[in-house]
Image (cartoon, rainbow, N blue to C red; front, side, top):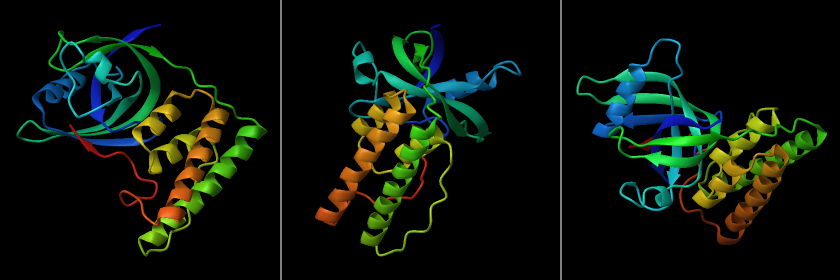
Length: 228
């Protein structure tokens, strides 16, 4: 069933289920969003939708819907730290994927959205486990190659056993384009996501080997960091 949630568009950030999202909230519209979350009754879920902006950093006006990708992920609030001047530090964790159906720009200073929840095909069989091991090995080689360019030694990676959790963790950690990350977020099948992710990591590893350079340093197993 469709549901209505507050929306937090972010430039160049794709949130995946299970991945931490630290935010520093200083814009008035998003301060209002956090205050509204704090005012919810005890026991009610404090969550908001995170969705990537196609181009630029701002969304508004009649073309707002076209400025956003269609698939996003909710952030379940784990901690809110208020500051005396009205700012907030928020820690969220990716929870449920959704499809954007409609935008409401009038009810609040911030956007809210009608969304459809996307079910995940949690392929937990032998195929998913095999492909997960392969993806983890390819990522290890990719991370080692990037670390070598920086003149450092890659530390051993402790990766989760669950194929779905692994796929989202590697998708958030690898240096991938916004387009690539959106493709991975939109994929409901764990097996297909792992296949796609492995192909992307092999491509990126080849770029590192051939070009001997990457656009920015890789922070192993990092989490998205963004200011609004």
